[in-house]
Amino acid sequence: MSSLEQRMDTLEARTRAAEDELAIIRLVASYGPLVDCGRDDLAPALFAADGVYDVSYGRMTGPDAFADLLRGPDHQGMLARGIAHVMGLPWVRVDGDAAVAINCTQLYLRDGDGFTVFRVAQNTWKLARTPDGGWAIRERINRLIGDDGEARDLLLNAI
Amino acid sequence: MSSLEQRMDTLEARTRAAEDELAIIRLVASYGPLVDCGRDDLAPALFAADGVYDVSYGRMTGPDAFADLLRGPDHQGMLARGIAHVMGLPWVRVDGDAAVAINCTQLYLRDGDGFTVFRVAQNTWKLARTPDGGWAIRERINRLIGDDGEARDLLLNAI
Amino acid sequence: MSSLEQRMDTLEARTRAAEDELAIIRLVASYGPLVDCGRDDLAPALFAADGVYDVSYGRMTGPDAFADLLRGPDHQGMLARGIAHVMGLPWVRVDGDAAVAINCTQLYLRDGDGFTVFRVAQNTWKLARTPDGGWAIRERINRLIGDDGEARDLLLNAI
Image 1 (tube, chains in turn brown, blue, cyan):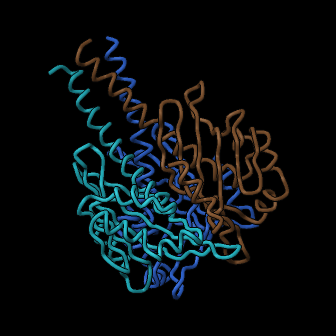
Image 2: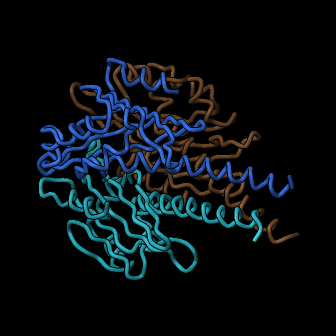
Image 3: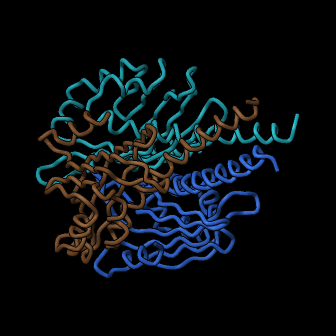
């Protein structure tokens, strides 16, 4: 193999790594706007068919269960009031066809003339490469910061 | 054309796509610090000559109008008090020489010994590639989250 | 040199630039989770041997001094209570083997059933390429937003 071919192989792999990291950043970035405007078709599609969303108030499996959450009275009530899921900068590590992202999320609600931060949580996202070359969420765990140490343990386990 | 040339063509296009996404992330990231320290020369230069900033309290066209906003009593008062425009992670989609970014922004003000979140808003940014290969804002729309549904509609229209 | 070799050289340099920017984004993103779960080994390792952390309440030099801060009563008390260092989107500029990142950070604490934003600060990060090709913090300066103008001056000096 020529030296140029070797350099090309290496560069293709490096480009793939950068593309993967950007794709996962983009996926996490898309999550907030999709749930904040109630797109109960596109937001669930971020999850794999057996993808899990594990949050303080329950553990859901699959896009349909997540869509039900978005269509439920709690989320619809927050949508009507004015809501923002702020996705913190994700720390992404890709390993072949799997990846882990860690970030902090904040949930803001409109509160009269002001705004209330309703949830501050640490998150781990396990992702898998899909057959079409994209990425899907296999498991997102979200834990409120607090003196129960759950958010801290979540981070310790993922690092 | 040789196989190596074909691979090179493909790789150049992929690299360009990653560079575009990073450039737009960088542009959005620069917006906060530039307005928070009152750089009324560099912050307006992020906008195209006919670039629009459309916010709850008005719609401005062109860098000069944006510079006037930064030099005005409201922004100067907030600068004196202590201000932070927190730029949420942008969801970037590039399509040739145009791009759209969606993010949530928070505006914090110092408030005695503490801090007040003064604005929580959803944002859409339409960007265009400039002749020098950079990117400029063609239109940024910013809407407070709230029960008027404006922030939600903004997201729905941009997705 | 063949045209293909020239294109390869150019593309390798462009890929390196994108990798550098992503590596610095990743480093900043890792800082929050590492300190929020008390990894007093990995968080200090983000700093160069003579790396400085300069914050309102002191100026520390070297990873050991930063580790002492993490092991001290203030940080341990916040860990027990529930804490999140939210790393704002960094504005990264790379120049050869040096780089500067600018971002806003927020520190949230659990407060009964709610959450308090305890610090909102502007930050500058000076980074240097390490012998193994990674990046390390040479100096991070963190200043609370406020009417003393320190955060604003920090930004003005770094831009």
